[in-house]
Image (cartoon, rainbow, N blue to C red):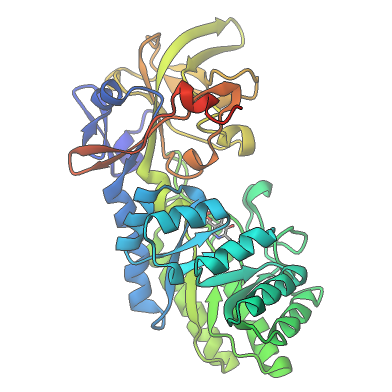
Length: 437
Ligand SMILES: *Cc1c(COP(=O)(O)O)cnc(C)c1O
């Protein structure tokens, strides 16, 4: 009925009735840093990175690279952790490029995505020496060619292709199907025309192809199937256009466990089966093995995060529901509002009490949709001043946070080996009016 936090994730535990995270007492951390509070567990970030880098070293050709998808969470201290683990970076905006620059990240390992790059974005990326731009469409490709020509440089690019695969995840995070705002589909012939055009551009070097089928993917063989489709396309294009694809970037998307009933995704096993398919298909199609790239975001940081809130009012509507409100909400975690995402919630200072009260954990924003979790189970004694913990919030929480209702955004505190240091400070009321003129 009440499986233990430790079963959800290795970095959660209970000591003296308190929830611990990364070996530290969350009640003490809340008292020290205030709430709402984002915690990030550095050892788990590094451990997640290593699952990928060790698998890559074992399974893929030299020069293959794991790119961390910045959009899951981006701040300078995190960029430095990613850098020391030897990963590259996937960025989608000037802000993410600038963050990487500020962190001293090696720009040749930065790949710039996005279905809409403004001219200013492209100029900024070239100025900062971004290693590779992932062109989304023909119009953008020509803009890139013009900017590279102005600088008299040959810019490395990948082309974003949609392989026509439905990852069976939430519609809002499925991106690999033909009907998508991202990339150009193989099925309609547009991918081939895109590649032919790219190969004619004197200032662009087409190193390879990119696809990304979706996020929070649990379906068994989505990556294997998209790899097979992409390799078949590569073989076809070698025949038709003489194109040799050096790099195959299969995007991000491996799922993370948010609730006890979610499956566990074994990354080393996933990488092995992906490598087996790539090797077998390349042999069958007589293709040289490309360098392989993946772009995990969620599976690097999600389980490295935890959010703490202070409980306010608890309101019972007889015959309906009990509402437990907290001092944050959709401003720091919009994922239930956006995708109906599930989360595991606890009262961190009452871990020895049974979680026998079904309730909705709701935020403080002026929106009925401001719900963190509609069907939480918390102790019946839950009330004002208790500490609510929402697990697995490391991905797409801080990076999606807003100032709706003029709420200041929480700080991010990095935990490592018994220490806790602020990586992003709490916004103040002065920050809230700082841009007003
Ligand atoms: C969102 C995204 C990723 C990361 O996806 P995760 O599900 O967080 O692993 C990687 N690449 C691209 C192009 C994306 O859009």
